[in-house]
Length: 318
Image (cartoon, rainbow, N blue to C red):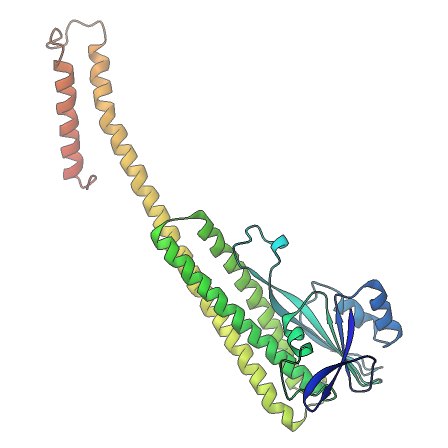
């Protein structure tokens, strides 16, 4: 789907046709819309291929012949129900969002292969003081919202970690352990994507790829601050999650050792009556008091008590 937007008094409004200085939003494009980008907007074919690659990494590229600029960054999103094993577990992933500068027609183009909440907020006019004709500033405003969405998702992950920790303190549930695994996977995705986002913004800040104005520097600093904060939070939450999983893994291992020790002791103690009754069940006349029916039971019980006393004195039983 292709939509056109243009700012009016700092507020974005939908328009019916392309105008100079407008924003072209391409959402979940089809093959026909891909051809339209190549033919109508005359976007460089290499840029279109990169923008349509769902596994493309974050980077910025400049075509010196046309002056077109491509910026690709990863944006966080909640995984669809069809992509997760347990729908009750909220897991996150990232997907690329592409920004294209088309200087010939003075267009700013965004390409999203799937629904993106960050772009949707701009299309719905959620933000003010946005001007589509100031394309560099518009890009930085979108990158700022992308970084802030990382922060929102990271706080949500931390809340889930706390909830899972409280549940695991009460009961060792496999579902909570699998939830921890899903959250750890989400943090790995975020960490990798934030490194690419930080590298891309650093290249933008150099001013070699695109011209930066003095008014954009403050906004660029805000973007870098938000990215650094998100990267630090991701690192901290990853360390916390690893510490929690290692601790509960040790607890599970310790509980298993205690269970195995208890079962071994029970087996050892119960083996004593079996040995005694086996001797008295044989056709042997040399055993003491073989004619006394309760002697074997009393003898086995005394040996069991002695075994328990020895195990307790050796701190095996507590």
